[in-house]
Image 1 (tube, one colour):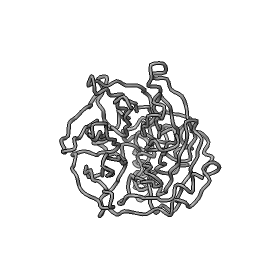
Image 2: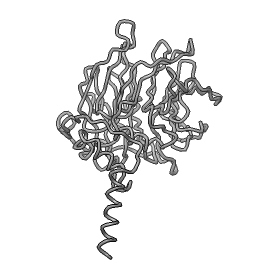
Image 3: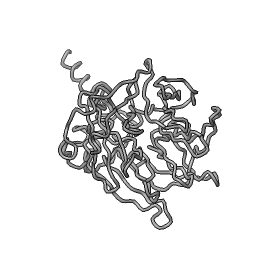
Image 4: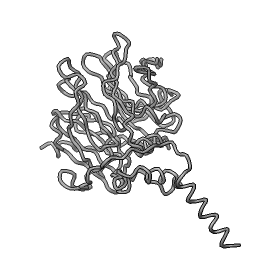
Length: 361
């Protein structure tokens, strides 16, 4: 009798792991061999010198925007947007009712926000929220992620996944589903405020994430998180929509990217790569089985601090790390003078790192 019960339980578990419906339909691909933390990504402790500016348990200052008055604005998981003033004090501003991620100020002083739940928003200095884009080319924007604004006023933003809805699953869970499936559901969108129209500039991206207009205003740099690489997409008349590769086989998952000084771009690596995901990249059926396992034992982001700066040729100029994750899940960095303000997906603080001149000599 006991033997029959054990066999029955075993058969049920096998059937569950093999057949239970899951939201992903994994695509086989060949992940590049992870070279790990070797030159130019040699492991170091430089980012352990970071200063934490605590937020009283508010979570996830995912991106920063520098206002004309010098205040630094950031969005939180709760939907709040707060700002850090020049004296170092944090103030509440408003709540979008969604999940504000990437943000930048336009020339008129409006805060343009990629809200994962609500799409592309503009917020006036008085706090009036207006929706700009909720769908493009007949497809709903389900995961507005990062944003940048060109000198001509055009706005470029990523729709990280058109399949895995950020509001339905939550931003982190949706990102994990999209990366696990590797189905190319992300896209880069251009919005023209003069005509109030949006156009898909690039499709088939594996979790489209960080966006930065190049220093020469001819292209957009786009982080393809699910493929560990950085793309360049043309936005001028001569190269519009043309895609090229800037940097590949990163040792972690790239998140946001921002223009810095001296022709550089700062980006955050939110977590080291997963050996399990890489090993199973060609085995879609097994990735589906993993999705059926308890969340506690599914692959997840590791707490690790890592920001780098690259130039237009994709050369790594600065490589700042904290393997112990004093400030973890680093999504990006905003350069102001000799200071980096470092953002995070999961942390309960802002990150402030002094001393850039030492690395610019």
